[in-house]
Image (cartoon, rainbow, N blue to C red; front, top):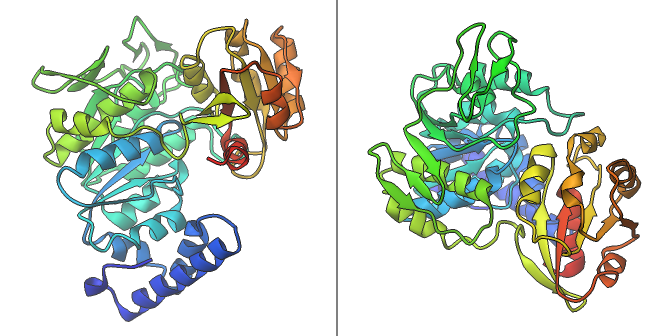
Length: 412
């Protein structure tokens, strides 16, 4: 960890040094990157450190239920066209991890920061961002996070009067409700595949009307705003009506939507859409997601899905039957210990695929698949599951800690 030493107080310098030492001990003990423990120790020494580290940066905050790690990476690549970037690229998105990331950005011009939904308002207060990107809100970690309407209300209150430019998804009513308290909003028509958390009006509780891609509340008049940026097929439409082609190495419509929002953010910093989108092509994988690894003479593609909306998007990415699919679900602290969300996922979309189930909560998932009428096998390890599949491509879909378990086993 190193800081922007010219503007840092002696206390802040001590905090950064202590955080660096704690992170090094954590790495030496084989407990991961040390970014979280390093940030926690640094904040103990100087509770104001996050704000001090952000003072010299033009900061972008990115928050959402799904897609924030990928979008953070895309924005970072785009902004590098205008100067050095510091970012929490590996997804440590609570204040300690963010502090740790910014501690390494003494020479950076931009700070591109992924923020956990619960911490957005507080991090925004500390870092005085120039821009805030809000992508979506849906059910996730039901034992930890508030109900989505309550989370939207927290965002709305926390962002009221913010000086930041808010880049928000016009197709998600919860995001629109949250962003509408801000005086300066750029609306992006990025789409919304998962709608099951947005059938009631966040403003009044009335039933949302959804003709086509539009939405509105027939009771209070709350409705979809007109977007100035839009995803249209393989193109991003800018506010002038120009269409810019999206060329990504990342798969799926969701990542095109992430690219559209990222282009709108980059434009706030003077990076033209063409330049921004060209730079996004460099991103091949994000913290292991979408990587294809060789494992037991098979091509294992690693896909992360943490909640119902994420699983729905992931099902659209996988190769068609008879491609084998391995599903892995844990319920550790970082995942949320409540697995009731499995019943919100339409697993019938996997019909025709040979399926193997692994992970700490493989039996919970097995019950869900049995009710869905799917054929599957329960396996103890990723090794066993891979051996049951013929040589060739295997799609591996896992939630957060299960994904990390698989990455460690396959050497990714």
